[in-house]
Every structure is written in structure tokens, then in C-alpha cells.
Length: 349
Image (tube, rainbow, N blue to C red):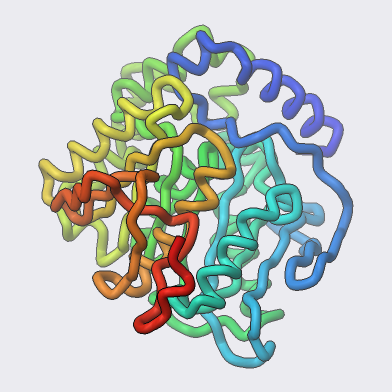
């Protein structure tokens, strides 16, 4: 997708995404925020650069966050972040609350330090397009991670590789996880459109996708194509705990999220519970916005990396369900700030 094509596509996405009827049907996998991109930039521990992508046949950009207090030599886990449809690799600059919240949790000693990379997936749904013209998924899995290992001391092993995304990037996260089930230690999926096979096909065949190159991206979606569509569908592919291959899964959706997202995520959560697929599920008191997502990012990583040892402070922000066991404390959990470390009450609100 050339820059001119990308700008035209992005303008259409942002305008079309404001159509509430469209949002009510899907919740839209191409949302996230309509920010403009900029050139290579650097700001303290956040930087942006490009790699020459053999898969895309052109330079592709990504930004990198490094944690406070890091010596630059100690190997750290890598978190790969997939942005929504209105953002790009500058997401870490455009939404500074992301890194500020990570800094706070890491400095408080309740979240282990890590390196985060945010590649530019344009408006490509983080998919390998059916017509072969784009390879966004493989770009992330095969090229971005390799580039990070070449340039940074990334800790070895699957347990040190995590995937997370919001909106379009949330959908990209769950589909990439299904396609590479043994690759990542965890997957964090926030405000993502997740549908079963039949609803996915109905949507792709619907009038609201008429201006999206559906066949180029997703392939044909006629009755004879159902088996192919099902082969990637999370409902179909996650039917038991064994299907996760040890991947730790976190789902989050806002009570005031884009119309359509809350019921679809609840349906996926019910499916996972019914099939005994372990996961964390959170409904938070917010919408399709960075303020809410930024509060969820560290709690998801804390749960993935520290499990039951993850310390959470109380408040009214969200209700969290851990592996099917509802921990409804009436007030839920507040992830705006980490819980204080043992003996340190000064960190509490």
C-alpha cells in the first residue's frame, strides 16, 4: 500500500468509522483513533525507525519503548503492540499515557521491565492479504521481531515474547495468535471485533463493507468458502485448553465501547468458558479510548508475567474474571496506578 493509497484509505476509514450504523453492525476492526503520521522521531526512551521489508518491498516503520532504569545491556522480554486502524507507528508518541503508565508500574517494582515495539500496520487489518499484495502478519512475526533481536538484547525463549493490540490491532492479535499458537507467551486483546464464522461471513458480505476490498484482503466469502474462513476463526480454533498451547490470553472490552463490541466479546468469553479455555476477561467502565486502554495494558502484562502474584489496587474501574473465577470485589480493580509494594503504602491512591 503506497503512501498515497494509505492516505486515501485512512481518510475513508476515519470518515466512515463515524457512521454509527456501521459501528453498530460491527464495532469495526479498523478503528483506534484517527491520528496523522510523521517522519522518523525520537523522544527520550521512545524512538522510531524503519526496516527494509522484503515482504512488503519497501521501508516499513516502527517505534520502540525502553523501560526506565535499564542499563541497555540486560536482556529483556519483548512486547509487540499492534495499533488500531486510525494510528500508525507513532502511536507511542501520539499517546504518551501509554509509556507513562508503564513507567509508573515499572518504577513501583510491580511490573517487570520490558521493551515494546509498535510497528506500522497501516490500514491492513494486520493480515496477509488473500491476493498476496500485502503481508502485514508475516512482517510482524518474521521481520519486526528479527529486527528487534538484531538491535536490542531481547531475552530468549517464547516466555519472553508477548503480543497485544487494540481495536483493529486487537483483532490482529487474536488472529496472529491463532496462526502462530506456539510463538507468543501471551496475547492481550482489547476492544476487538471477534465474531464466530457465520457472523464474520455475514458481515464481510454485507453492504457496510462494500467500499473495502474484501476479496483482496479476506478472499471470497461465499458458502463454499466457509471451511477456509473457519480455519482462522478464534471460535473454531480455540475449543479446549490444549488449543492455546500454553498461551496466556487476556480479553478486555469497555462497558461504553463501540456498539457491537461488548456483546461480541461477551459471546467469545462465554465460548471460552464453555470450552474450558483459560483466560482473563475484563469489562471496564470506559469506552473505545486511549485513557481506558492505557490503564489496562500494565494489568494484562502483570497478570501474564506474574500470574497470581500480580498486585492490584482496588477501585471502580473494572471487573476482572480470572480463568472463569469471577473476582467481583464490588469495586473491581483500578489499574491506573499499581498496588503498593509490600511495606510501601505511599503508592496507593
